Image 1: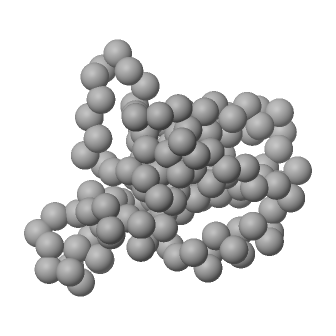
Image 2 (image 1 turned 180 degrees about the horizontal axis):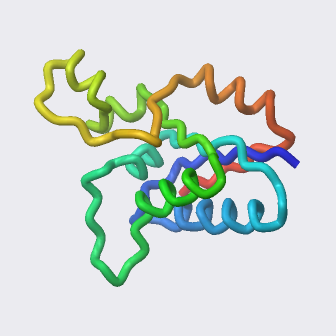
Length: 130
């Protein structure tokens, strides 16, 4: 079965992102396909590459990257929600005249149109929200 996940929870202030990651790993281990994880609302903070949790805590940003590298799952981030919250890739930083960026591959800034396409392509879309 082809799945997509919609993550709307920030990485450490609620359980949504952590539950989504555990769900993703479990369904992939059971042989299902996870086409993409779409980060929306405060879930876009999962893409911030300057995240530095204590060493004894799960590093969610790195875990999402590990998931992408192991299974090829796309990590898509709503560009409007990201920009609103101060997250941008190098291209958007240049466009907005910012000196720094905090989103980089394999996270990809996309629009809500991509979320709709993703929903049409998959058998199930599971939402993880606070």
